[in-house]
Image 1 (cartoon, one colour):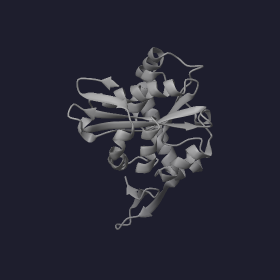
Image 2 (cartoon, helix red, strand yellow):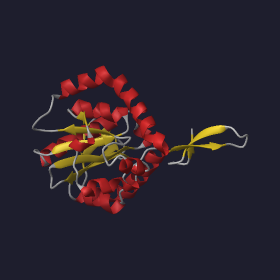
Image 3 (cartoon, one colour):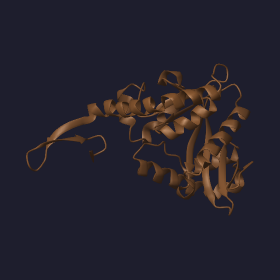
Amino acid sequence: MVTSPQFQILVANETHLDFAQIICDEMASSAMARGTGIAKRSPEYIKEKMREGKAVIAFNQDGIWAGFCYIETWSHGEYVANSGLIVAPAFRKSGLARAIKRKIFDLSRQKYPDSKLFGLTTGLAVMKINSELGYEPVTYSELTQDEAFWAGCKSCVNYDILMSKERKNCFCTAMLYDPKDHFEPEETTKDFQQHSKLYERFMRIKKWKLLKPFMKKEKDGNGERKKIFTLFGLFF
């Protein structure tokens, strides 16, 4: 268990099963608010992770649920992903996400010491946290090719883009920690700090490039031309 002045972060178990629905609801709500995709998970799936000891859960001093994250394995355990990181709205920007990531990373290394840890993220803040753990940005080809993993992307709003790029690119940035071949966290953190502005710019350009094929021009009521992102039905 990790304890701080504000939170307790511990490995989830059967005593926490009642929080599964709350966690799933908050995952969906958060993804909708950000306008990003998420691989949807059911309360039953979250409960299974809790029973297996493959999840961490956080509470504040008053015992109120504050955050969650779980472990998934792919390619017969060769790859491990720390998925579903979520922090309750009231506790965001408190450093809790970083603490949860550290806890689930340590749990993953304990359970799967020889596995490659990887993640996909659209957020620069998560990239920063990952870099502090020793993750490095990589191409999609360096991730698991397990069909079950990519099937989880079907519920993501960006799935059509992923498939149009033959699973070689999408909005998410891929990051990997290889226990047999990796830089030290101090090095990956320094690299991220030095290039964070470039990463941010690259992600904006990447988003534009990926969306461009899904754009079309249509006339508005005044006969003027405007661009419409038909993939999401959103006007920009």
